[in-house]
Structure formats: structure tokens, C-alpha cells
Image (cartoon, rainbow, N blue to C red; front, side, top):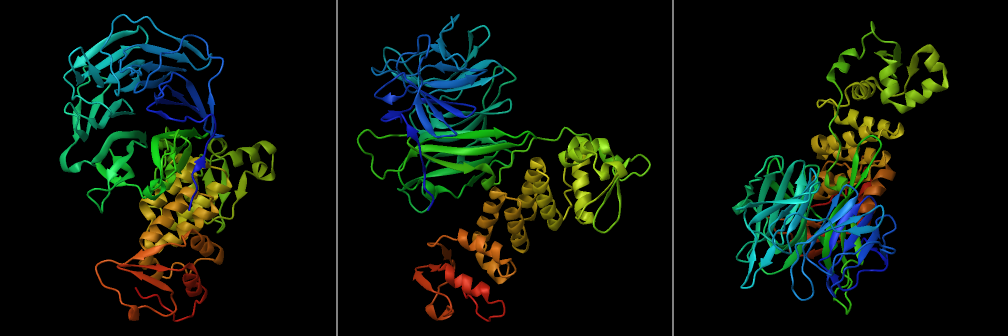
Length: 553
């Protein structure tokens, strides 16, 4: 079983409901309840070490929890919150990340003090939605959207929105999605609203309600946007029980408005998980590599001085089929130049000898290997002719990518697989991710899974490898019957076997199983409708290509 990452340094013992802000490879954490504080902590996301900020200048905000912290330019904007004597705040404080300095802007007006609201920055404006407030007579839930102009520090308020607190606000482009939380009656809700932040008065429009909701057990949750999808982490009722609750990771497609549960809940079976976010790395060719970070504690029972953020899980979004590839800025007019002898100044010759007429300026711009060859004055650049060992089909697909920055949607699985390996060899990361995305969304079938699995290993694409493994596990019966594993090379087959957990089981539904229907060559342990298959039994079966041994399910 995978082990959670143990953070080090000055851990956040006894802290709950602080604010979090990601800045490059750092996670800034301010304030928090329990023993209410106004300390500023920093988690280095590379070393996973906690530090308490030192040599901070200026006057920090007073102690608080349930506030918000939002990144704006190179600053962190703190708003609202609640202190140890249940006083609510409506002040604004700004922390300059570069100089480690706190300052408080001079606001022209004020808005209601609150906590458990949401905050988002878009277009130099801070959007504060909802929250829990009180007056001298009672507490209540705010039905207002407060917008702070961060250039002039003036407030504008919009009333009549659905009242919410303990909800999430997530930006996707110019839209802000308000999800779940609690309503004015204190009921946990799971509806979804969207606001267009380009057009005041920012009227919320209902997107999801009723039967299309995924019902949260507890209102506290975390929501992030990845590849124009909402990814939500929180506690939900378990499918098999009306009383048990489990941590769950769900993804909402904003086009189809369909929810999909991600198969990683076993990671969160033990302990408590108190924060989720997405960390993004940018590659030189524009591809964004997203990692899902979860912070919590894997202790089965909360000890004294419970550390809410000691342990971490990291999931790469590509293992969920999320490839974050920006849209192409290329003109399709370039495609008309490919293989035109009249206008070309270079020739590419694939293994079968049939030439392609190309243009040096395009290849120099788009293909670093060709650019290096051209600059070094190699014989190919002098002869204006280059021979490559790949087939004509693969070379043509590669050249189409160089000219169009796109893959032909009609291309075969075999060609895309070879193109993936070619992209890895030439260090073309954008092309690699485009191949992975195409193979996963358009070609992953029982007949193709063995080939895709092999090429994912060759191209060192762990995300695609995990996606194929998940597919093969879910279609294990069809994979065995199609002899996919037998036709793998010994190395690739061993990679598959190594990925099968020792405690793996096959679920057999909709029929009864008796011991006399199971081959003696397989070691089984029956338990209601499930039986476990030991890895060595599968290995014996795979090593005997001509054997008549069968696995009867």
C-alpha cells in the first residue's frame, strides 16, 4: 500500500480553518482556530517542510479563523474572519510576498463583518460571496456579494443572491462557480450557481440542483478547477450505507454537467483530511502539469495536539485523464504547404523511401532536434535531405503536427502509439501529452489496451500507464479472454503483474459461483460474490502460451 508523505519542520499542531494561498512552490497558511493565532506558516512544496515566517515587517492582522486569503499580483489579501471571543471582522490586510511586509489599505466604505465566506480575485477586483454574520440580536447568513476594487479600495455591494456560508467559490475563466455549503436555515446544500464576472450586477444562475447533485454529508469541502472541470473533495454518504460516510473526490464536467467519482477513496480510509488544492507546474511548451495535493493526518485516532496538516497525498491529474494542453495558436494555412515540391526546400525520407517535401523554417521553429542539426552543419543540413527510420504513416502524422500543431482525429491507434514514442525520443512534451490524451479518450479499448500500455511504459508516461492499468483491471475478464497479457513482452507483462495488489479481487456479479466451476490451476478464496486471485497463478497461466489452462469465472 502507498504511504502518505510525512511533512517536516514546524508543523501546524492543533490548527483548524486557517487560510491557504499557493504561490509558486510555496503554500502560505495564515491564522487558524483551536488555539487562535495570527502566525504565518509556509510549506515548501518541493521539500514538504513547514516553516514559520520570520523577520516579517508591518502589523499583521489580529488572530482569527474562518477568514479568506486570496492571491493578487504578488500579494496576499486577507478579509474577514472570527476571533477567540466570537467577534467577526470586515477588515482588509495585504501581505507583500516579495518584501514580507504587512500593510492595511485605507478603505472608503465598509461592509458587513463575517466569516466562512468565499473570496476570489478577478480583474483587480475582490469578490466576497455570502458568509455568516451577526448583529446585536441574532446571527444570520448574508445574501450579498461584496466587490472590492483593489485599485481604488472602494466597495460595491449587490444584494439578493442565494444566501450561503461554508461554500466554495471557484474561478473558471471569467466565471465564478458557487458550490454547496449551508443555506440560511443551516441546511447542508449541494447546488451549484455560476456568476459571469465580466458583467455586473453578477447575477447568480442555477446550474445544478435536485437529482443531479452529489450530496455532501458535511458542508466543509474544497473545490478546484482543472481542465475546465470542477474537482471537489469532501465527505459524502457511502454508496453501500445510509449512515457511513467517506471522503470522496468527484469531478464535474461543466459541459455535460455529469459527475464522476474518482477511484481513490481508499487513500483516505484512515485519518482525517483537512485541505485539498491543485499545484500547477508550467513546461516551456505551454503544457500545464497539475498535481492534486491533500493535507491531513493518517492517525486512526486523534491524539492530544492533533496535527491537522502533517501528512500529504499527491495525485497527478493525468492519472485521472486530465491533460492540461492549451489550445493551439497556429494557422491551419500551414498545412497546405506540407509535401508541396514547388515551395519546399528540404526532404524527409521515411523507412520505405517515399519522400516528403517540407520547409526548413517550419522544422527549425517547431523541432529542436532539427534546429540543432541545422546549426551544427551536419551533412543532412548541407544535402537538405534527412532519412528517418520510422514508417511513412508515422512520419506523416509527425509532420502534420509540426505544421498544424494538431493530431489527425482519424489517425489509427498504432500510429499514435508510435508517435508517442517518437515524441519522447525528441523531447517534444506537448506532442507527448496530445498523444496520451488522444489514446485515452479515443483509442482505449480491450483490443488496444496492451499496445497502449507498452508504449506508455516506453515513453515514460506514468499517467497514461495508470489509466490503462485501471481500464485493464475494470475489464479484467475481457482482457484475459482476449489473450492481451499473453501477447505482451515479458518485461511489459511483469510491469502489469507488479501493479496487481496482493489483495486484489475480481468481483463477479449477477450469478452464483461454486467451487467446481473453478479450475484447479488457480488458487482462490471465496467470499460471497468475490474471489481473490494470487499473482503467481496468473503468472503461471501467462508463461504457458500453449497450455490449455483456463481461468473460469
